[in-house]
Amino acid sequence: MTGPLIGLPANLPLELRQICQHFATPGQIEAIILRPARGKAAVSVAEAVAEPGRGLLGDRRSAGKQSGRRASKREITLYQAEHLPLVASWCGIARLDPTRLRRNLLISGLNLVGMRSPFPDTQLEWAIGDEVRIRITGPCDPCSKMAAELGAGSYNALRGHGGMTAAVLAGGVIRIGDCVSLHAVRTLPGKTAGAD
Image (cartoon, rainbow, N blue to C red; front, side):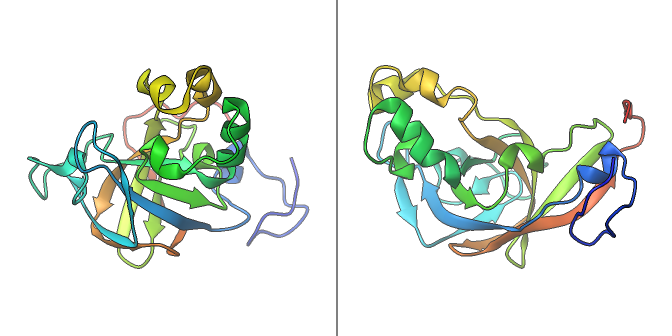
């Protein structure tokens, strides 16, 4: 397979493993959303502190969890900014405010699904701004509460468009406008590589 990828010469034969490690553009943080408590309205903030083992401080998921503990799979939730108009249309509403989805980070410019390696022996580590490092851990499927929030049909509108979950690998401050870019590619010993 050949093709022009950022940082690689054109006409270079590439394996799928290499292709999955290149992105045409960096992403950007468009919104930061905290959920103070279950059932309470989510709030948009200009910045938040991310901590391994806790997620975003001030979010209900961080309450009662210890700093520095090993990262779990669902410390932060992310949503694709480009999907907002599509989901709004499928829900029959004019505009979808991202706080209604209750995902922590609204990101534009990157396909969130592509931020997770399809190979079990490879992890992609992402930088948010200068300090924070995350790893995408899986899909964030919609829950039945979305029907109450967005109306009939919204659960099905969000299927496949619910966002992604992530673990915090290195903490720090996340700000609106921060760049989201690939920081490192890690090979895990003892995992099955799979076919290219």
